[in-house]
Image (tube, rainbow, N blue to C red; front, top):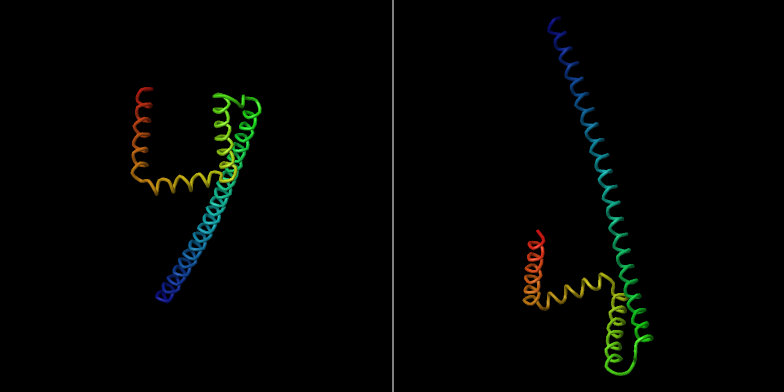
Length: 145
């Protein structure tokens, strides 16, 4: 009888232990699922914010391009057309207009592609330019301190 009682008590303890383990497993699974959903929501929001920022940057680049084209038109209208000043103003206006059209049509993504291709096609000069820029930045930051 004592043996039966001990066996029954052992079964009860084992059953309660299994129940507790199952509950703990379920709670951990639920917490994991909620954490996963939360992380997914944060990632989605970050993706949306980055996309929105990218669109805004592209829009601003287009606006800068349109502004440059407008400035080129103003220069053509207001500066002399003849002589040395006229030739210089015409070249500046032409450069502004071409740059404005490029910015408006290509945007930041086009600039990035073109810069990547330029570096890919000219790696040694790009390396020297990078070293030069690094040297200049180092000089500027050390003289300010």
